[in-house]
Image 1 (spheres, rainbow, N blue to C red):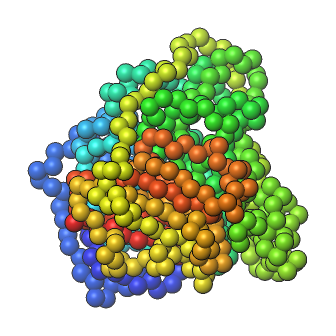
Image 2: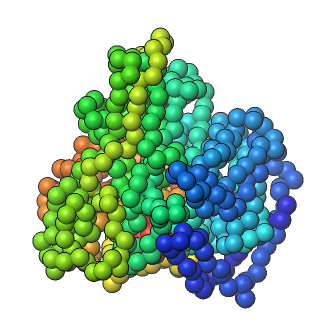
Image 3: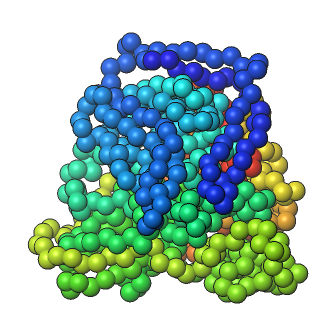
Length: 551
């Protein structure tokens, strides 16, 4: 199996946006001056599971009527248990992959797309050349062989395209899927399983009159992040989940490009959270709602045993404030006010800059579901009576807390400043370059690092816009040490703070305007480049992404 690994930075030529007609056209890259290294599958790597994955253009029926053109990943199991893969046929979702801790996995990625692409295993602790860095993107007709052992604990993970400057477009077109890991510790807890263990991938999309995907590349859409007009769950609109009168394990995954959700049951039932990005918590936690930013996952235990047959329960995203300019509402959600005293992005009757439509004449697509507004996600319908075990364990899985005193840089944390200025999305004032690792981004292997993400907490607004940024670090997962909020944003923060689950292992953390989040991140086992970036995919594509070099 030939594997092409591109080792030098490529230059983007051009691309055509997904337009009103729904055409999907993506960039090509200059090949002059490149060189490629070809690999075969390792002779000494003996996989327990071997999977063939192929990325190709396809059409699926998402809405009634004409099929929608997408980019689809399909797969087949070449070796190992047949239930390691579910192709999610009939949806745009990539296959769901299911592994067990300790398994050795080989995945052969074949690119049949008219563009370069590569997949990143979001949340998995794998060698650097298996992590999906954009430098490894393969051309049409080429293949990439991934080989790694599943080192992660049981949990809900994610995988998606990670192609430089077009990640947002490729994920939006369908190149993203669910990945779960189980282990003996989790299985001993007797949590709801099989059909009582339900993944719910939440995404937003916009469609034209021909049922084709619409994606706006307008600069202001890139600055805020693309927001679709319609919520889809597991690739389906108007999603209804039929349940029995049993307890369920619901795995919530935010697969949206930029949309942040404030998830709550519409009858005020508390959300009982049992897991986050990196698996189960030490013990269940109850929250009135759960904040879920792009790339984040949360596992919720819900007992429907006391509900009447035929009754319904709705999961909603509640209103919250997302701000700019030191506390004025940016997105127009929930009645908040924006630039020049009005909602900047419109929605709900708000008007834009200078009191009129922001761009005028429909030059910029504006979502009918503004960020921070209130809207339904899915409906749960009690469809049958069923007896069963519905008790929730008081304790789940133990987690050893990392200690700041053990960090190699305990007295000198790495501070990463998040900024939106000069129509750019930057980290410490720098945009992404493939060969631009700075001294503060060089980290000794097998070390624990103290890292701060600063989104205006220090009093410097860092440019025109302060926005929420979901910050993701590749490789081994981290633990959150503390959150600090500037008093200027306390009112904004009060609309979201009860929904943060900061215990357990995380790989993505939402950093609100005026906030600084401190975390402890191990960099164990593997050397090489591991990315850190905003998981608002439009921000990532604009350059809000950098590399740590582990040496």
